[in-house]
Length: 296
Image (cartoon, rainbow, N blue to C red):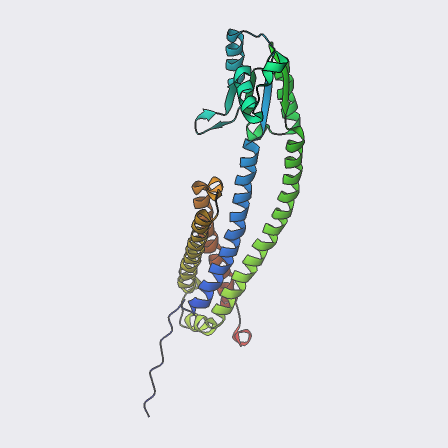
């Protein structure tokens, strides 16, 4: 009976299917958490953009004084600028009265014999200025300006956002740290088990005079490649998930940031390649330094 020829084992080759699956799954979970963090940051920024300061002006202020005051406030660095435009609006008392009349369905100025509303500036604040101390400084600065009657903003909302943001950041930070440690251990163990079948081949190469660098090279190149491919596959899955969310969830586009998404994908590919490389280097060095008895 003729025996089938034994398949030749190449240095650096091992069953890559399970390794690639493990790396891809680990990076997908890591990327999913990163995606949640990015969406949480985008949602927080969106909420902060709606935090406005209202500046009510004195009655009987002249149009020239209003324009001068508008130019002064508009030039301040704490005014939010988005898409090349400053989020600053001026509402005259006449326009405000028309809006209020349309809402209640009755002209309130007829029985009051006057318009009690005031000319108002409304603007959004840059996120870096949205602390209780800085907002109070802004309010104080505006109140000291000539022609300003009163300055108001959503004080309770700002405090609530800042307090909750700190709590959520601490919880998510601890979760991300635990997840990263788990991913590192999982990838390291998967590669270590995959290289276990190569330990005698590594010793055989040593016996024929191959240097440690020569033996390491194919393992390291292959692990780097598998890690990068795993990161690429995980990124593709996350991108598909994001596109599905954009189609199925109304308003999801408001949280979509392609630039941050691409940075996340590059990070996953880099993370997968580096973790695989380091895990392989550790395992190969371990078998290179083992005695024959330890290999068994």
